[in-house]
Length: 292
Image (tube, rainbow, N blue to C red):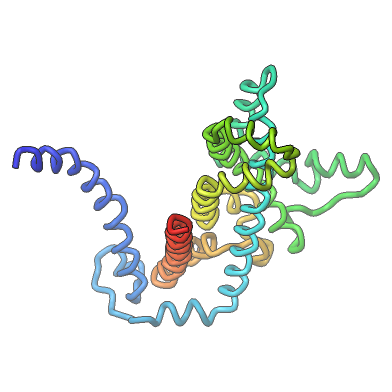
């Protein structure tokens, strides 16, 4: 009994934190999505029950399809480039060379900077009138590109910024996974005459699958809820061309004179369901790998 009480005493702060900071906000958001809230009822309570009316409103809105498509494109492209670049850099640094630790530490700078600083920096670099990127394009004879104000380029701009921010995370996790691969495996493959590409394809990459899976899952969850970068750089515009479900949820709840708290919460719950589905797929794949 004393051992159980001690265990509960150590677990109680964590359980209280999870209930207060995760379970309660989640329950509140679900409750918001099923009620017709106004500013008055949001503060004082008493909002009538709306059932799935808010979800029907959200799904019928043409903005939903655009925001969902932008979210999918933004997430998939970011994950592919972040993982590819992070893996290439991890393999490069795993070789070991003078000043490799210093250079690896410098690659962490984008990850350590506050998002508002990173987004503001990219907004300045991609500025149509005084941005450094357009200055370089004019120097080589390509001409200016309206990175932040063109519907064709706004989503590309925020995706580039997000890729730059996410590469260090992939580098750190994948590099740690590479360091945990036994050297004996590489020595055996070298004795068998395997080349560099064969070693990577048949040894390094398969043994990195568990680390790669958790890296992609965490990157997916993080990218789905990215708001700061997009809002600071483009505010989801122009005309919603770079808006995602996260920015649309904010606009519905706080970006208009007449806030729509119910639909805003419904969009937030859609994001939660997408992240939950990704987590379930990850667990299913992990169990399949353990069985094989």
